[in-house]
Image (cartoon, rainbow, N blue to C red; front, top):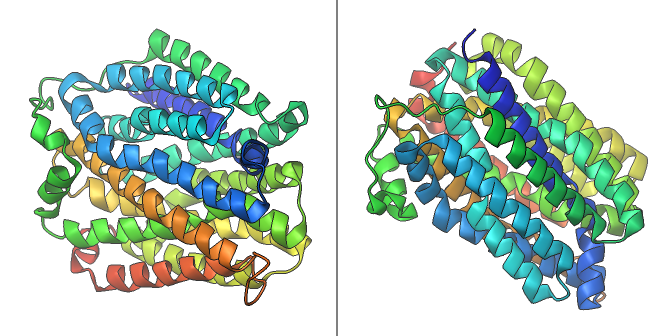
Length: 405
C-alpha cells in the first residue's frame, strides 16, 4: 500500500506531539501557584488565561497556516511549527513570571499547526470513504500520547515543576529530527493552491467555507462540540484536587486511563461503529453518551468512582472522527488544508472563551465566598453546550444526506 509508511509517520508525529502536551497538564496548577503565590481557585483563573492566550493565536493564525500548507506543502509548514514549539517549551521551562508563561503560550499558539497539518496530510492520502476511519486513527494517535504523556509528567513533577517542560522540549526536538529524515510531501501540482493572503484571514476563510451547502450548520456543531469538551483539559486537574484531594501523580494516572480508553475507542471501535451506525448516527450516539458522562461527573463525590467513570466517558470520542469525515467530504481536494485551518481556528476560538467560562464557574463554586461548594459545576455548563450541539445536528439535513448508512 503506497501510503502506509507516510501514514505511520504522521501518526507517530501526532503521538509525539501529544506526549509533549500531556507531560505538562498535571503540573500546571502547581506551577502557576508557585509563580503567582496564589490559591488553587486563583491558579485556575490564570490557567484559563494561559489556555485562552494560546487559543487566540491559533484562531488568528490557523487558517493562514492551513492555507500556507495548501500553497507550499505540508512538509515545510509542519517542520517549522515543530521547531518553534521546541523553543516555546524552553521558554516555559525558564519562565519566572506569569507574563513570561503567557508569552510562551502566545508563541506556542502561533506555531501549533501540527494537528491541522497532519489532518490535511491524512486527507491528501485518503479516499473519501476512508477519511472518517483515518481521522479516527489520528485521534487515536493523539490518545496514545495522552496515555504516555500525563503519567510521565506526573512522575517528572517529583523533580520540580519545570522538569516536564524540559522533557517536552527534548521530545519536540527529536520529533523535528524524525520529520526532517522521513516526511514526504503530499501537495502536488494537481491540488496545489495559489497563495492569497486574504484567504489566511480567519473570518474570510470561515465565510468561504460557510457558502458550501450545509457547511454552516456542520461548522456550528463542530464548534459547540469543542466548547463542551474543553471542560476536561481546563478543569480536570483543578476539579480532582478540589473534590478528591488528588496529587499530580493521580491526576496523571487518570489522564492516562482516559487516553488509553480513547485509543481503544478511536483505533479499534470507530470503524465497526461507523459501519454499523454510519457517520450521522455515530455523531448522535456520541453526543448522547457525552451528555450522560458530564451529568455523572458533575455530581460524583467518590474518587474511585471518578476513576472508573474516566475511561467510560472516552466512548464519547467516537463523535469527532465521524463529524470530521462529514466536513472533509463536503469540500474539494484543493481546500483540505484550508478546511483544517478553519477547523483549527474554530477550535482555538472555543479555547479563547470556554476556559474562562469554566474556570470562572469553578472559582465561583469553590471559593470561600461560594454560595454552595460544587467543584463539578463546570460540567453542567458543558452539558448545556452538548445539548445545543445535539439538537442542531439532529436538525441538520446536510449531515443526513451525506452520511454512509
